[in-house]
Image (cartoon, rainbow, N blue to C red; front, side, top):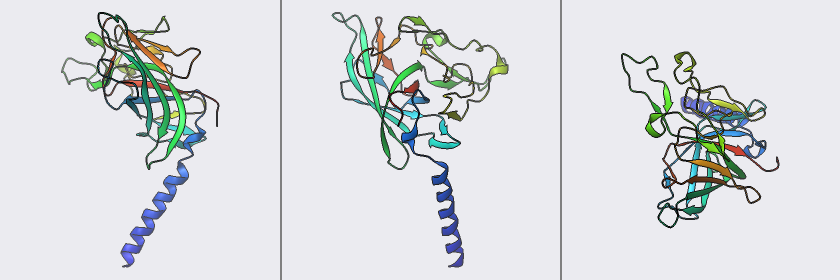
Length: 241
């Protein structure tokens, strides 16, 4: 009985510590960048307006030394507009609106986000005796390149360190919501400084200028398709709480 009481007290104390270290997610500052990955594939070919779009945080978000959004939290949105590529519609469009945060435990907070950058899912290179980057996370775009796409017509390039194994550091597990910055990650992994489309040929990204907050993905070659695991850098917008 005494051992059970001690175990219960220990669990209670650990839970209390976790609560004190986690702040209110509604305190997320404007322009904070969230590094996330898409939970499941979204394809303009079969998507419909209203379909839910979910992105999961891949890093903790800190403010004043406290975790306000733990890794694994969800940013939830929906498809606002969609147009499949076809004979009568040469341009495929996918408009996504992110408007809610869901943290572990069921708490939900209304907050708007736009996509600041997008890149293919991160994959591990297969081990090779001739590879200098064994096990280094890479972002594989069309034909396995890291060439940039565009955002509002402005070129966006991939990492210039793709061939430098000395830069193959582990991605930062946290990002500071006050400075909006995080440490540089491995080649092909989005950082808080990334912008536009990286490593996804034929895809462009625009904001919904003059309208409600939304991210517009376009392609004139094929249907806009974001695979599950696609990296999304989300930017918090709107007035600070």
